[in-house]
Amino acid sequence: MDSDHPFFFGPGGELFGLYHPAPSRANKAALLCPPLGQDQIRCHRLYRQLANALAAEGCAVLRFDYYGTGDSAGSSAEVDWDRCIADTCAAADELRARSGVEHVVAFGARLGGSIALAATKRARLADVVVWDPVVDGCAYIQQLDAMQAALRQDPHRFVAPRAVEGAAAQWLGFAISQRLRHQLADLRPDTAGSPSLVLDSLPPTPAHRWKGLIAAHAKVKELHPFTPWDDLRRLEQAILSHPLIQTVTSHWQGGH
Amino acid sequence: MQEQAFRFGRARHLVGIAGLPPAAQGTVGVIVLNAGLVHRVGPFRLHVDLTRRLNACGYPTLRFDFSTVGDSGASGESQSREQQILADTNDAMTLLRRQAGCTRFVLVGLCSGAQNAHTVACADDKVAGAVFLDGYAYRTFGYRLRHYLPRLIDPARWRRLLSPHRKSVEKIRGEPVFSTVPSPQTVVRADLAGMVERGMHLCLIYSGGINMFFNHARQFRECFGRVMTHPRVSTCFVRETDHTYVLVDDRKRLIDQIEGWLRNNFPIAPTAAAPLRRAELEASP
Image (cartoon, rainbow over all chains, first blue to last red):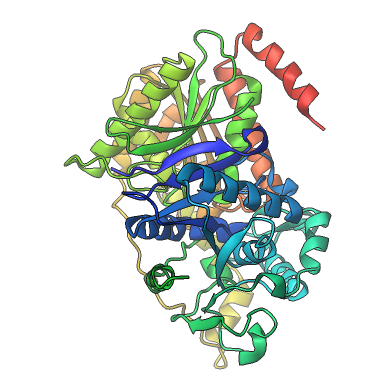
């Protein structure tokens, strides 16, 4: 039987969380920051497996949904970058209160990694591990726009192509506000909140891609096989990675 | 109204989110089942949007994860998957009965969720209605005519097939598929007839996303017989949409349709719904 506990927390009880207590007194606390959109649904299983693995190692863990995502209050069109960062701060405080551990580390995949980095100071995160974080907001927007354009014409999904207007203002199943588009366009590497570990499972690109994101002490570890984040044919397939779970768990066991 | 999170079930192994508006006695509870392995929020958050809309109408709802799916664990029992589905859904009904006083339930399921809703609807008298989204479907003679005939008389297709310069179609490497054998058509047809005979209301909404099995509204009757024209059965085929309703407006239309069907077949007593709608209006931006 699982002992993780589902609950609502935060301002107005609007945020959904699942707390995984450590089997005995926790020596560390880990906050798992989810990605946004379809990446969040695809990573749900992996986040649960990672939370269980960390909890088994004596780490108290909190998974949560930002406002407008998952089981939290709000609609998908209301997802807002600043609110995501505020929610991460609220989640870190909630984790401290539940675990009694002040030292909180964070993990995030894709935009979840970008949010964790942006929230590092405000949420008083002692360490951040990121997996294929989004560091170039404009390129990311272009990629999602291109995928959305392809999706509405996908013969494997629709009997006939759908009209442009019927697929507008949304990315891969989720309504997107203009405000979020603008916020993501401003996304740049945040050197103020450097991760100690970058897990890289993107197709090969020049090694300098992470320059500016990572501090001198940070490590980059490649994971294989590559993760099909941007493959439309796999849009509704779960993303699982046992190497990732092992790497993150052993990284934080090692004293980070 | 604020939703509530629960860990519940015979082994406290299930996780679900209940929406509990003030409900009049006799109001049905709506339980939304997992679509495949997607956790309780549903594809593109469909289940969240659906349950919140129904809550605003006054229906208590529960979206939850079956054993070992999403955030739910294993019950530790030695059971077949079908036994687990029946027991888990019974646990879900017990929760909604305790929290909202519901004694009758409507199940909503997409794809494998529809098949699971079918399984429970066959066996559990507490089920008063079901919404099957892309549920059981079988290729009929009519399906084959509609599928192959246009292809046979399409000269462009013949030109492509006979061309010496025909491009070989890129084959996508087969992904591992884990699936169960669907129930035979005769069994499903008898099941549906039995459900209607027992007084259940059924709503079947099928999409163009399953056009490898289903391609016309007529196919409901071709597959399942005369019971599809019974007044307690509602059917709808939406050719243009995909299997998981990836476009926002398609999801909205689907939710509109389910809400309309529920209001018609399981109307809410006005005393419970009216104050809630006022509260919702005041809360809206």
